[in-house]
Image 1 (cartoon, rainbow, N blue to C red):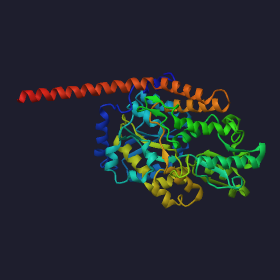
Image 2 (image 1 turned 135 degrees about the vertical axis):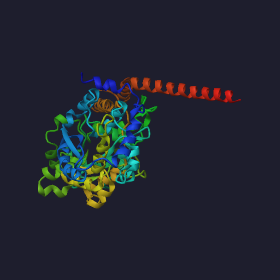
Image 3 (image 1 turned 30 degrees about the horizontal axis):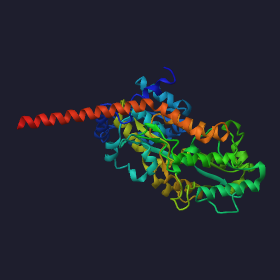
Image 4 (image 1 turned 90 degrees about the horizontal axis):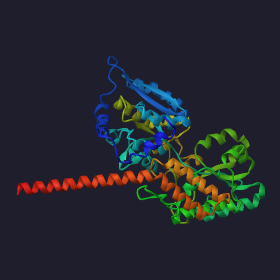
Length: 463
């Protein structure tokens, strides 16, 4: 099947429209989980699990203990490269060959829910003594909730914040508590460093940075339950104006990822004083910067638009989630595996193996992450993490946002023209979604009218 075929199929189902067997499967997860596993004399149950990237490798270390606790269950882990995972998942759905459970990037959840590929988890969560929704970061948990239904469990989390050179940001208030204070700090850094130094690295072909600023400004990004683009809305315009102004005034260089020769060497050389990036760079900077520079870098949460607003400002609710597929051959055993991976002690072990930040607050507190200044900044930022729009088209929309920002930053289009073009393009992407949601609303109205007419006929017959 063609590369684009699964995406077209995803657009044909509204996010809240779940196939009829989903509710029955949710009940099966609860009813069978307590007894699943059996004894050594019973037939073995196999859980097929797809893990992505390095996580798919290190999660194998957690299998032996799970199988020891559940001697009737065997877990088969298949490692899928992140670069191929999205297409492989969609192809597996179309071919009715999905695994029992898998790791997903949490922005992929809406697309697979729209396809009817996933099993709802609400009843299993409610019956579980191991899963406490209040122990998760609220914004990350919310990435797995669509139309009030939970479809995944956060496995590990990430978000983005400031990494900075402590020696280069000195000389003024730090960390900044507003966009204006942040910009003044960048102007001070630029003036002190001369033409060889930019204040901040913002790869111009990345979408997270402009989207984060928009979320901080309270921009909805989409309107009407995801039916329409909202990029000419004043709050998004304000965020994009701030973002592109950093390039216009020389505070950031218009570099794309391919032209950044070595991020860590440039950071060490002082070519830029700060960057907005994620937790994977905690380990990278510890490995790649020389020992004499390890005390010269730190992390800080992102500032909000205005002084006096809640600090820190918003950032992305990222990470990976654990899901059960609707066509799972062993749904109850798959749930036991997900529940096991979600337990605090396994989250702590997974942190040791992978370096990924745990999804549960209790693990941060018990493991000392909340006390380490570099990781404590991530915990503070995660308390203010928010989901991106939960529509299957989000990946394409995000790419188009980055393109619009690049057009303005390079002087190819005015801000007004770029935002108008962005609205028009995203509206076209959402055309099928609008049609499906409208069709679903009409069907719901027809069903309500039929129920009302039936009630009137019943009343008339009784009289």
